[in-house]
Picture 1: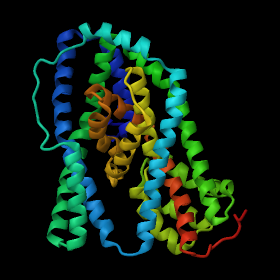
Picture 2 (picture 1 turned 135 degrees about the horizontal axis):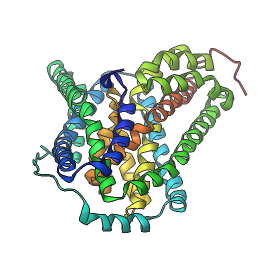
Picture 3 (picture 1 turned 120 degrees about the vertical axis):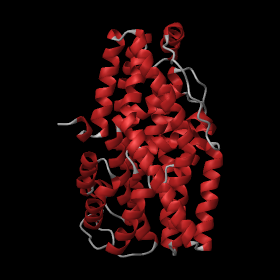
Picture 4 (picture 1 turned 45 degrees about the vertical axis):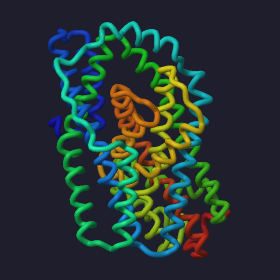
Length: 396
């Protein structure tokens, strides 16, 4: 099989393994070539992130604004609240359990000792972003709302064309170069001797994050059952074909037919399911948010960085808006969140690279959590609008 036909996850795993091994055998001059590439790539990525936010968020808001009706507003609010709640659940769970599993002392000490041996690029290319992440987000909101209110076809088409350009840049430049970037990051960590500590640290938290996904889905369906009267565990079991389809496809959009079928089989009104499921495939990101927050806290603990609930509440609130329509590209949620990670949490380029690797390594589980949770939202929306269930088999 050709490398280009491999999925992004296998390429990332191969890049990590090769990067670790290369750190032991590459001469400094060759290793510095990859570090130079990483420096340029990172600078370009920093330039692209604000544009990515505008390109993703503005057209999505414009499209939502064109749809009329209370059901749209209610669905968007519920999806956002679930995304925010999942982030806060991840924060409180991770902040209380991760310090028992990982420690800053060994990592910080090793990182300081490795500082002198860290490889330097041959040269750097500074590519300044056109505007900050917060400016990009505000601009996207203004453009999106403005287009929806003015019904400007030309401006709407312009935003969609701009989104296509950014998607092209991501698919043709960022995604193909990402394994090389990850390779360089782990090459550098291997040279400096920190890679073992990093891998050990995150092997301890992956099971916790997976358990969080399961717990989140159970909680979402229990809450939904209070509205719908359906048995939450039977309903969740009915959605398992959609969950496992998402595990295989790693795509919310590709899973929509299965998600829709199982939501109707669960007992949700057909018309409600047909409206909510495609919409939530774009705007409901509970699983993705849970992963990003959990990994971010783990990194901050290992680095000895201070954080609190207020900081993460603000971060999660912004994240829920920033990653709208991010499912349009592989790893879109983590790409869209890089700017917030740097500006609000103080992450470095190396931290962001680790976040990308960790997120993509668990991408299928986050996607599965997102789309399975869509069924719970459909239950709630159907009950609020008094849409009669098409199936009483799952009643409690």
